[in-house]
Amino acid sequence: MMGSSDAAPSATRLHVIHRLYSASFDLNCFGAEPIGTYMLATIPRSGSTFCAIRLWQSGLLGAPMEYLNFRVMGQVFRRLGYQPDERGHIPEGRMADYWRDIRRLRTSLNGMFGFKMFPGNYIEIAKAYPSFLANITPNYVVYLTRRDDLGQAMSYSRARRSNVWFAGVEKTLDVPYDFDHIKGCLKSVRQQKQSWEDIFAATGTTPIRIYYEDLLSHGETVVACVLTAMGITPDASTALEVPMIIRQTDGINADWQARFLDDLSRHTEAA
Image 1 (cartoon, rainbow, N blue to C red):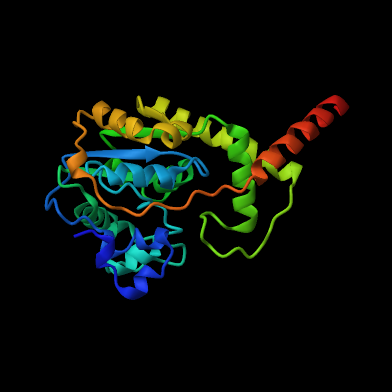
Image 2: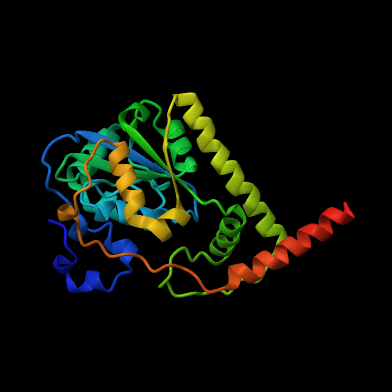
């Protein structure tokens, strides 16, 4: 059963993001195929891990982490007995087995299972395992975005160049302001958002739309709205103790945003 107190002493020294994928946080309580599934669709720097943990803490929405992001799942693949190839992929013939195992371990007591996906992960699955795609078709899609595209692009630029995606990770590089890189990240943020809209249109999906800014200010209300949209009655008695990541904020983004808008204005005038 899941519980932070169950973690081995060595595990407690791991960054919380690694601990959340460990056996100590498996739910392992439903014992059958999920009654319902949902995909947390999002893009980088939308606060997706913060959102996933908030949903997980409800005790009614599984543990919606990145179970199909092959770049980060080696730890889970190996502890479940799967050997990924040099690309980090599981052989196609084992994907159905892996998906069965991860759902068994990460489904809530009420039968709900969730998983998080970025558009790149979805496209990679479609290309690498086309016959498997139908296996992950969810009953619901929760679509998390940020209203502040530029703030997101600033955060994305810093994370991509420093390779630091979570607070509490030792920094190896302080990256400087870079107008062109931020501009490229802003374009990427908007393209990735459009990719999800295209996927929703192609699959006839009407997502449950939520926003990072609302999660920060009214988290309980947002989670309750998600539950209600799925036909699940919110119940405070089911809440789980799941450790939260530290929010990354240091004031640099605000300074960069002012510089970027000034530079953008001057570039536009010179064009």
